[in-house]
Amino acid sequence: MKIIDKNRWEPADGLMLEPAALQVVKSEDNALIIAGPGAGKTELLAQRACYLLETSTCKVPRKILAISFKRDAAKNLAERVEKRCGTELSKRFQSMTYDAFAKSLVDRFYLGIHEDYRPDSVYDIAVADRTQNDIRTAYEHAGFIPPAGMRPGDINNLLEKEIVRHSLPLPLDNKYPTRAAWSLLLKGEVTSTARLSFAMITRLATYLLVSNPQLRKALQLTYSHVFLDEFQDTTNIQYEFVKACFHNSNSVLTAVGDGKQRIMVWAGAMREIFPTFQSDFGATTYRLVMNHRSAPRLIEIQKMFFSRFNEQPISIQTNPKWQASDGRAYLHLFENHIQEAQAIGGIVQSYLADGSHKPNDICILVKQKIDVYCSEMITEFNKIGIQARNEGVYQDFLKEDFISLCIHTMIIAIRRNAGSWTYCRNIFLDLKNMDETSSKIHESQRELSDFIKKLKSDLRSISNENDLGNILKEICDFYSIDALKAYFPQYLRSNYIEKLRLQLAKYLWEEYIKAGSLDIAIDNLLGKNTVPIMTIHKSKGLEYKTIIFLGLEDAAFYKFADQREEHTATFFVALSRAKNNLHFTFSKVRPIGLYRDDQDRKIIMDFYHALRDSGVVEPVVHTIM
Ligand SMILES: Nc1ncnc2c1ncn2[C@@H]1O[C@H](COP(=O)(O)OP(=O)(O)OP(=O)(O)O)[C@@H](O)[C@H]1O
Image 1 (cartoon, rainbow, N blue to C red):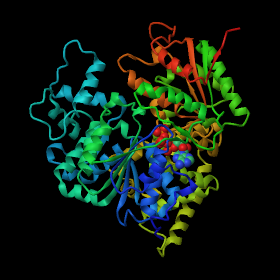
Image 2: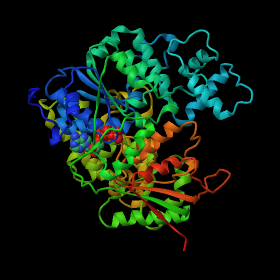
Image 3: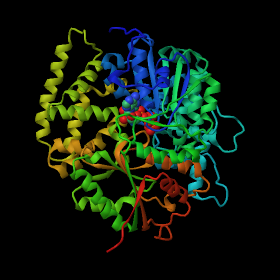
Image 4: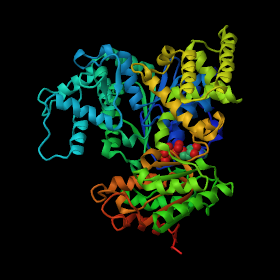
C-alpha cells in the first residue's frame, strides 16, 4: 500500500475542510472539537481516519478505534472510512458502540475478571423493560424492601441506577443489597440465564482493565488513535471506562460533540464532560463554524436557539452549494389530529409526486409515543398508498453485522449487485483468514458463488416463515457460526445470532406476504420505499431532506420547567436534522391518553417565539370546512 506524504495528503472525495477541521485531521495531540449540527464532525472523523491510515501516522499493525453511541452511527462511520480509503486500509479502523466495545473486552477476557464478579460464560443482555424487571427481581431476592409509598416505576428506575452507581469492586457499606444482586445476575440464579445490562458490562470492562494493567497496556498498544463521537452524551460510567482504557497513555484521543445536542442527561450524560476531558487529557479545543447540512433559511431557525443554550453567537457559515433563499419551514395549526393526518398525507404525497423526494428522504419525528401520536397518520398514509413505519423497531436490527451479511447474501442470490458481492466476498475471505495475495482466493470465490447458486434455487421454493428461517440457517452454516462469532466479537458469549436469525425470518416473511416478491420484500425491509417515523432520540446523527415534527405541544414536553435545557436540546436536535424543509404541527385536539384531549402550547411558548423570531417559519392555519 502506497504511503502518502503528510504534506501532500488531501481530503478524500474532493471535500473542502474548514481550517480548524484540517488542523484536527492532522493533529498529533488529544483534541476536543465542539461544533454545531451539520458541521461535519462525523465526516471530520472519517477524514482523520483516512489521513492517519494513508500517511501511516497510524502505523501497521496499530489500529484506530472509533466509539459511538448508536450502532447505525458506528456503522455509518465505518462505511464512510471504507468508501474513502478502501477495504484494505479500513481493516485497521474499528468502529463500535460503547456497548459493543465493553462487551467485546468482557467476552474475550472474562477469565481476567475476579471470580466474585465473573459472569457465566454464556449470558444474556437484558434489554429495554426487561433490564429493570431483571434487576428488580435480583434485588428482591437479595432482600431489598422498597421504601414505603414509592411507585413501582420509580423503584425500577432507582434500582437500575443503583446497581451501577459504584465502580467495581463494590464498597462494603452499600445502602442496598447491590453486591448480592450483582452476584445473582452474574450467575443467572434468579433469571433463566446470567443477565447483564450494558451499563453493568461497562462497569465490568472497567474493572477488568483496572485490575489487569497488562491488558490495559496491550489495548493502548493496539489502538494508537481513538475517536469519541457524540461526546456530549457520555455518561460517567462510559467516561470512567474510557479513562480506564486510555488515560495517561500514548494513544491520541479525538472527541467531537455539541453541547446543544446533549439529550441524554436523563440517562446520565455528564454536563461537565467537555471541561473534564480537557483537564484529564490535556485536550486542545477546536470550534467549527460551518453547517454543511441545512439550507441557509433553516439555519436562521437554528440560530434562534443559540442564546437559549447560553452559547456565544457565532456566525455559522453555510455550504456554498446552497442559494441564500433555500430552505422552507411551516408551522401547521390544526383543529384535530384527523385533519392533521389528512393534511400531512397530502404534503408527503406532493413531495413524492413532484419527484423531489423518495419516501425515505422524509422523516416524521415525534418527541415520544409514536403509537399515540402517529396512529391516525399511518392509517391515512395506508389509504393513499404511502408506506410508513416506526423506524426505531428496525434501526438497530438492520445495522447488526449478522443481519447485513444475511441480507447482502440474499441480495446477490436474487439480483446482480456489485456492492453486496464485494461485501460478502470480503467477509468470507476474512473468515478464512485469506488476503488478496492468497493462492486459494479463486477457489474460495468459486465456493461462494456455488453457494449463491444453490441459495438462488432454494429461495424460489419458500412457502412459509419456517422455510425462510431454514434458508437463513443454511447461510449461517455456510459462513460457520463459530467463525462468525469470532469475527464479530459482539456475538461471542450468547445465542444472540440465533435470535437475530429468527427475527429476520419473521420480518422478511411479513414483507414477503405484502410484496409477493423477495426482491421487493428486502428493499421494503431495508426501508427504501418507506417514510420513517421515529422519536427525536432515534434521529440523532441522521439527516433528511424534509423533517415533519408532529405535536409541538405542551404534553409532548413533559415536566418542561424542570428539564428546560434538555427539552430545548431535544427540540434543537429535531429541527437540525432537516436539509431542505421543516414542518411543525400543532393540533388543538389530540387524544393522547391523558386527562384531556385538548392540547396547549403555553408551557413551550418559547419554542414558538423562536420559530416566529427567525422570520422564516410560515404559519398555515388549517380550518375545518
Ligand atoms: N467538508 C464538507 N464538505 C461538504 N459536505 C460535508 C462536509 N463535511 C460534512 N459534509 C456533509 O454534511 C452533512 C453533515 O455532516 P456530519 O453528519 O458529519 O455532521 P455532524 O457535525 O456530525 O452533524 P450532527 O451533529 O448534526 O449529527 C453530511 O451530509 C456530510 O456528508
